[in-house]
Image (cartoon, rainbow, N blue to C red; front, side, top):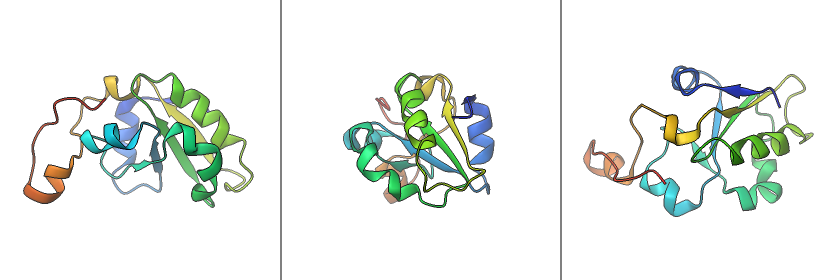
Length: 119
C-alpha cells in the first residue's frame, strides 16, 4: 500500500484521471450516497473480487471513517493482477471527511439532491 490520500486529492483525481475508487461499504450504504464514479466492492467480497481490479494503475479504497479502507488497500496491494507500478491508497478520514457532493440514485434519475446519510 502506498499510504493514505486526502479527500481533496481524491476529488481532484476523479476528474479525468485514471483512478479506480473502490467503496467497500455494503450495497445499501453505497446506494444512499457515494463518491461520483466510484465502484462498490464490499469489504467482505474483496478477497473474491479483487480480480475485478486487473490492470488498474491507481486504486483508492474508501470506507465510512478511513479505518477499514486501510486494510482493504493492503489486501488490494498484495494482489498480483495490478500493474507493477500501480499505486494503492486509502482515503484518509473516509466518507466522514468527504466535503463534496455524493452521487445518489435520485441524482442519476432526477437531478441533484442531498442524501440523508452516506453511511
